[in-house]
Length: 249
Ligand code: ADE
Image: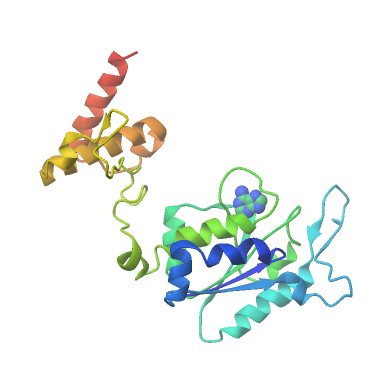
């Protein structure tokens, strides 16, 4: 996969891409990430990327020309790939694990980091743009949002997991939040690792983890329980958890 990022703050994006597993994935050639400064696509002497909004109001709007030129150059640079253009925006569709999976199967992603009040709406008419938000809150700019999306998406690229991580135990992959994990030492400040995890009894470990995942989801994100398929074992665990909860009130 190739990812082109258009930003007016390459200094936010570039360092993050060389660190951690994302950096390794880039080194190993699982994905190529190119960061472009939108100012490089301006033609005026001040390299302006923003201007006041028509119709008035506070704040600045990102100009259409440099973004058009930048996106067009990225598309033209990969004539044999299907390009998908994403604009980060608080008013976009909400990014989630399912969307990360969808993006991880794309050939060529072009991510435009929105800033200020937003970008000139004509960009959305000139290209088939997907506006994407990482959550219901407003950031000063979309650079961190772009990093969040790329980091969530990159680890799902075929090959990444087998090399570096395991996806099956991720929160959301099973429709539930993740169960708690422990590592050495077995005891820390009087807190013991649950006995079952040291027992070597695989079936009991599986049941323990399922129960803990259900418990966590019920506590932190109860609405998620209604949207997943529960088997009989899950249903009886949930009934137990619910009655334990009402007993303790
Ligand atoms: N830009 C500003 N807020 C944002 C958000 N929540 N997601 C994506 N881009 C943004």
